[in-house]
Amino acid sequence: MTIPKRPPPTQDSHSASRANPSELPHEATKALPIALLRAREALMSRFRPMLAEHDFTSQQWRVIRLLNEHSTLDAAQLAEKAFILPPSLTRILANLEARDLVTRVQCASDRRRYLFRLTSLGETSFQKIYPDRVKIYKEIETYFGKRKIALLLELLDDFAQF
Amino acid sequence: MTIPKRPPPTQDSHSASRANPSELPHEATKALPIALLRAREALMSRFRPMLAEHDFTSQQWRVIRLLNEHSTLDAAQLAEKAFILPPSLTRILANLEARDLVTRVQCASDRRRYLFRLTSLGETSFQKIYPDRVKIYKEIETYFGKRKIALLLELLDDFAQF
DNA sequence: GCTATAACATTAACAAGTTAAGTAAATGTG
DNA sequence: CACATTTACTTAACTTGTTAATGTTATAGC
Image 1 (cartoon, rainbow over the protein chains, first blue to last red):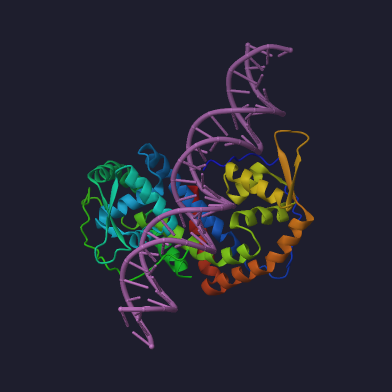
Image 2 (image 1 turned 90 degrees about the vertical axis):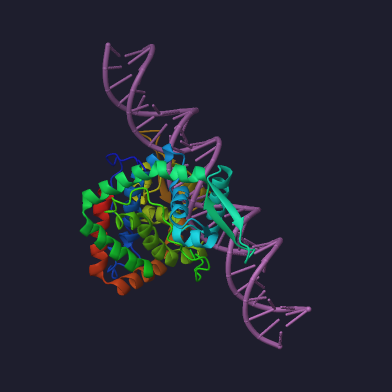
């Protein structure tokens, strides 16, 4: 992300004009959305350059990865598993189809639906990227330890239910 | 986000063609990026509709909120505090200026820099939204408890260092 | 069988994320 | 002072996020 950091030339004047000086029980909670963003960015900044070298965005890669695991999925399943909204997914799939990485077949029993599958070129791309991906995940795991990662995952799943 | 969830009509065929069946110590770690996304989305889905009613995106609101706290900030400070990349921030500030919520003054000592400040309209907007925001944070805090939130924050900050 | 309703995918329109390049002002070095 | 380098912000181009609306196909109720 490379957000510029420099010594503050304009000092914080602490002139916060609070609306509710009495009810500040949520000082910590307030930081949660950005803390989630920062943590995720810290991780993704490791993957992004690697994926970019292979001409993939992280979302495109999620789709490729899922199609490698499940061989065929329809758009709704992809949307749920990749956590991508349908309109974004439509564009991503159009892109991947144009690059001959993915093909679509109309579902016979429900013609509203399309089944997606990796082409052989798509599979090749997956195989090329996979080792780099494993390497990065191992770095993360070595750095933090499985225990801490498991704990974080548990908490995150908990919050995802909210 | 409202990602459609329905009973899988196409069964998972478990036909995962693994590249490295031997090295799977990172099964859990793999889920981390999406878990962060899901947790964040669970939170943001509470704020987004409320902010939308006031015609703000969450990013626009972050800028407003920071300018309310610090009275004047330059673009670099805003970028860092709001965790928004400079190009996005440029557009957000242009939008807020066009809506008369924020004004910019060129910094005298360094004319590359601009100092931003809320207009009185901007302050009014902040005051209007603030109570709703507090209410949502309190819900979150009541639901999970301060201890769990503090623990999550600690872990997230840890990961943000990576 | 017909009609109303729901579901799947897409399109449209706008905001934001991401990377690279550009412009202008400040700084550093000879 | 002249010149290269750095810094702050912007622009451009492309991708994705987000919401609302649309077209098409399934399904449910009558």
